[in-house]
Image (spheres, rainbow, N blue to C red):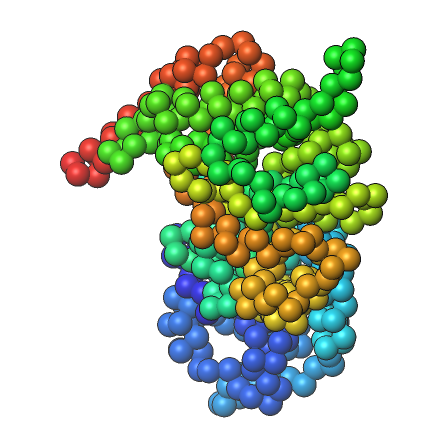
Length: 475
């Protein structure tokens, strides 16, 4: 049972109590023929006056959910089973949609009074549309959120629009951390991926024996596998990637760089970060592919799918697009790096809006999606990694027609993976930093000057604001 926030309006409080009691009756938590606890107890439990509570009870009586028995109490009436229709919003580029439709069907089979409507929304404006629905009270019972979407809601202070979800021991703790605020889980993790290297096995047939320990090894291999014809026209590239934060931040973390130091001061202009940005830029130069164009048109994926790229810095999510390729491909079972063998962690989870009239049923479905049976089906029908640890690491659950040879490499990579939220900046600030980095990728400025400008222009004000806030609290 959730706590009632005393700061909300009286009408909101009344609506919240009405909604909870209504859901308890409709879900069968309070069975037909049973009595509600006394009005005095309900008033104390929900911090309501008896007059206000009686308005709630009157609404329940008008809806035919309870009947008032004089001198005894309020009894739950026998009601015909009502079909509950839930709306489940997801982004249209979600690779697991066919799997989610199967999960919906199996849940509906065991809950004949429940209907779940899966509604894809355009990815470009997805989180804005979801936020509008959450704030305006439009029906939204289940919401698919990437960690990026969740970081946006956390950064804008909107995670209170989501119900508390039940944590589970079988779900990786790192994934639960990704979708938690102050230790409270707000979305049930369903799938995840570390950032990894994919390879075209027709170009790199013996990938597991590659000498690829350091950044220099990666750079040299990238140059070696980039081929040109007699006229200098490129025939293939050794490595392709986008310049998105999910890529260059991995290199920053691998080199021990950070946005803020241990003392909280901005550290983006320190040598560790500058060196990582310079190396990332050298990878761009070695391939001569504009990262701006890649980011807009997914040129890296297009080239890989057309056998024009040997290595691709990508994710298990992208591997879902590779089933029908006319060549073999694989995921590299290691992570080249000099200082620390780290990578970034991304994932998706299912959240239930606080205003959903079917919270209990929606949370039950979220648990169904995270169950061993559902997660096993997901693993057998997608490359995305299930969040259920026992399923994910069960090597006997594998589909050779979908999974690459080294599919289970993520088991060794996961301890090295960190989510974006752990890097010390929020969604909006990271977006501003990403724009500033275009100066480097487009060769309009040096890495050192850009990092220095980001530190002074964007990070220093944040540090100064935190100092001022701390000073006010102490005062």
